Figure 1 (spheres, helix red, strand yellow):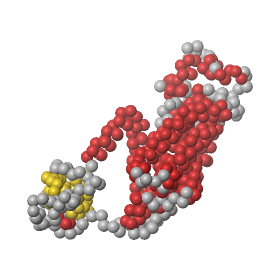
Figure 2 (cartoon, one colour):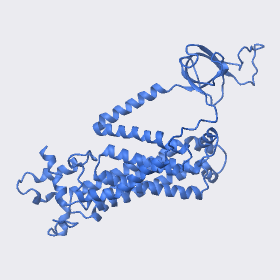
Figure 3 (cartoon, one colour):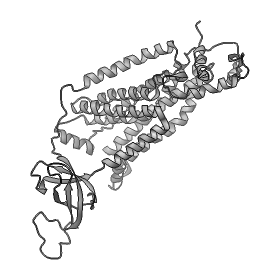
Figure 4 (cartoon, helix red, strand yellow):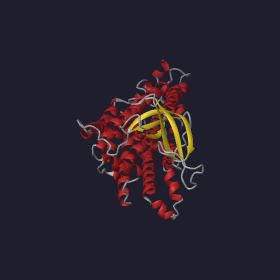
Length: 453
């Protein structure tokens, strides 16, 4: 039997306002109506795990989603295959960086800057001379593991404050391992606290999310795999950074959403909404970065170009960062909207797609404000040193906002925010149109099995 979009014309228009009082679904048992009506919203809130009522998709809806998503998934796979630098290795840095060597500081004293073998003449140092930090270290690995070495480090405002018992990293330039001139004190060792924090994060996710938390962690790992094994090599090989970022973001989106929220209709709609919003962010970023004459040549990009020894599409690299940076917030917005629409549809199957859209949009308005604020604060926090430097430069506000670094962050923030705002109505209308195509019998049938378990 082919069902119309709005099942049944018998109830008067006002009856839509009282969906919980519909006894027609369980007239055989007078004690079932209230639990049967309250159960679906709770059992369907799992964001899709591939079982039970979390994926209320009929064959008609599944076919529609396959026709919509299959070309996009195929384009993502083909793009990754074409863009990947098959058979070529990563380029080497044209600027020698040295081999990392771990060491521990045994003593650290401040005093005049003396070279090895040099002695100070007189008891009073030059008051205009800058002091230096002399550190004695013992290397724990590298070509001179277990050997002591003494290094002198000029004390500048930007120099880290090294003290005794600090675990540090040295850069070995390949010379005589017994010569202190072959080593440079670079940084602190941070492996242990980072591993502990990552373990704490994983435990927190697993305790709260359980199996879905485990799926989220796996999706997170796979996202980094895509970035490290595809995005970085393809960009370093000379491919267009924006095209590479779009292909990589598509792969991350498919992996993260389906692994975390399950292979369901609502997840598929969230994928469509995320793709549409990402496309909008990419278009807006490209248009306004060109209009603002952004070059993308910040300090990090300049260092990268110097290390590569050849040019790179700096503006494309800026756009690639915008696309990938907005992906995480978009996932949250689109999943929330599709889940809300699906629960509204299952709670009241008589709602039309326009009514579903209106109700879902009201929910989205509450969510979009916090999502935009999250993105703005994240970018503002990352750009805080740049803003502080610009604030003390003595230029006016207009020149400050128009500088390369600040203008890039403004476009990054506003383009991402427009995409997030647009994700709410776009995802909501897609979810409403597709959820409204679910037959009523299928919606009802997916609520009853949960009560029999």
